[in-house]
Image 1 (cartoon, rainbow, N blue to C red):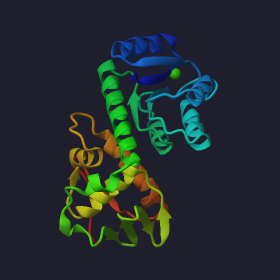
Image 2 (image 1 turned 45 degrees about the vertical axis):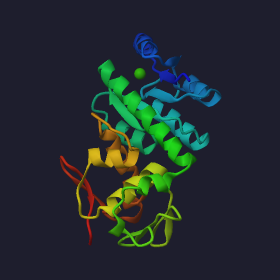
Image 3 (image 1 turned 120 degrees about the vertical axis):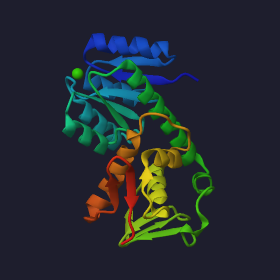
Length: 247
Ligand code: CA
């Protein structure tokens, strides 16, 4: 089955260049040159991935992403293309639901690698959502870690069997991947988890290279838990990874 990618880029030469490279890799490519037609195409057609430039005429990329996610409930993985050092764009992009971002100018190899990762993660996530999420995920879990699949930290309770997370009684809605990431951190409390380990636990495949997708999911978790409830649950260990410490 062919993989369809929508390239949204108003610099037509760059769009054409990316298209040629992607076609060469075997992807089927469609192009949009402004935000409004991108939104239209993404809504009307089924894509496996969208490469979305932020600086676009009509609607900017962040607005396209926001409308796709919020208004249409569209969950096609989106890689944002940002200008150099546009830190705010990256943050808002990830908050708006992008899976990754790449900074201009980029090497085509890097773009191809990120596309492969995003596609793999997405299909893995679809598999998880289709079925045996918990069984598959817990197969190699330490047995002593939780009583009846219940993990507790402060006022946070993760219930594996019910697949729920609550903080002080308030339900927190997590995607499967966020849930797996949180569970992995809770089950390894006080152990610093490297990005590689987290990626392997959560995505379940051998992965070499970019691990910033882990940072993206940590950011999602923090925005849904730490920021909402005013706590510091997930700690960053610079240059190593992440940890949830016992109190
Ligand atoms: Ca642009």
